[in-house]
Image (cartoon, rainbow, N blue to C red; front, side):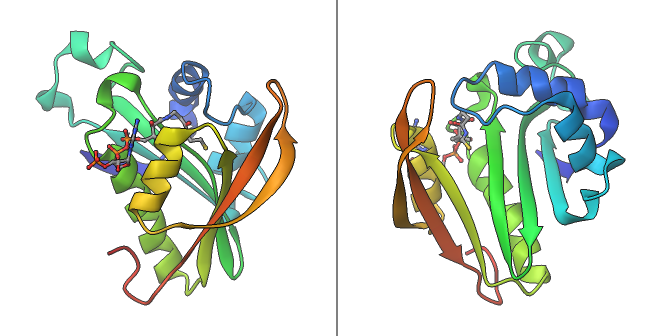
Length: 169
Ligand SMILES: CC(C)(COP(=O)(O)OP(=O)(O)OC[C@H]1O[C@@H](n2cnc3c(N)ncnc32)[C@H](O)[C@@H]1OP(=O)(O)O)[C@@H](O)C(=O)NCCC(=O)NCCS
């Protein structure tokens, strides 16, 4: 699996993947364009895509979820001295293969390289898969925001992971 920074050419596929995942955070095209370099705050964002190398997968397989080999992505914002994980999405057919963990590992490595103290995030209470993933890579629950999400109304659970000099372990 290859991890690389997203470009503007990836945006339609990222949106397609995100729209197919109801529990993912949903952004407008304009927000994605700003995040990958078209906006004033692009330097504060990390947008990573995970893709299979072209020879490793058939065209039919590439088209199954998001097309063109992109099987997941992550968006995070650098708010010195911390990072906020804003979204992490893995295509349904590629789940439970370690890709979410790999994407979070790359974020923690980036946080370590920028001398950051911690990564924090919030997630719907009912999002078991995401919460298990965060706990698996060392995030700890730090709080709750009552009725934070709408449609449906739900609490947000807050998580945080300190970033040591060695980053992800
Ligand atoms: C959350 C998500 C990114 C996880 O991606 P993934 O590639 O399947 O995660 P991984 O394979 O790296 O899983 C790592 C660990 O997380 C935990 N985990 C992941 N999915 C799980 C699930 N459905 N149930 C229980 N534990 C789960 C496990 O401990 C797993 O390790 P294991 O497979 O060795 O047991 C994926 O389910 C997804 O895209 N969900 C929809 C989008 C979303 O809700 N994103 C978060 C909102 S911001």
